[in-house]
Image (cartoon, rainbow, N blue to C red; front, side):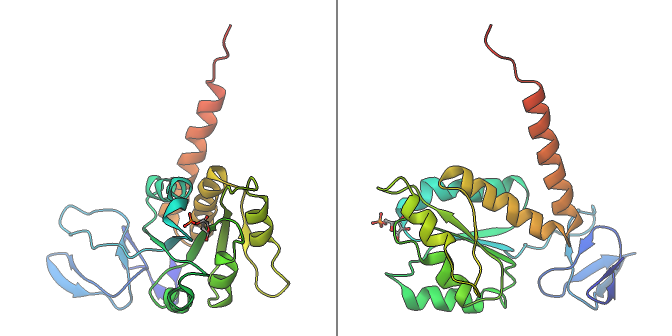
Length: 208
Ligand code: RP5
């Protein structure tokens, strides 16, 4: 299998993060490109995974919604990080986060905000990474958040999900689907999630 122009060294590794030294046939070898373990061979320690997805929210008060994104990413085994950053209250820190995100190894950013929800758009303006916006339920039932997040002028896209918890969960599933186009382990986890969900629907019993 080819990945980024380099041949996959052996089963159980995928490309991510910095280069690592592994025990192969009893000999320490430094791999020519950056790979990380997706399975754990009995004789090789599991290196710490770098976050691939960032879950950003405009306020700590958004956590009850955005935790659904983090929990879904965790369930799918997608390495992630979460933090509060505000387009309005911490504009410099938000821009700095977005500008450095790709170089830190992040591949998708999920941004949840409520009210005049500019966070996802501001982040998208500072990075080429795909940005998924989650409109937080607000005093206007989240319609203000939805329109503020979705109605980006042409040129800087924000992929906007549904208002509230469903949107947060779906943002994580969509982030995983984006990563799954180049990561077989995440693809398998996503397929298993879908199968389990379908089984639960088919097994549903209605009250008699
Ligand atoms: C937005 O303002 C946040 O994303 C949050 O949804 C909303 C209210 O924030 P707090 O006043 O609760 O901190 O920036």
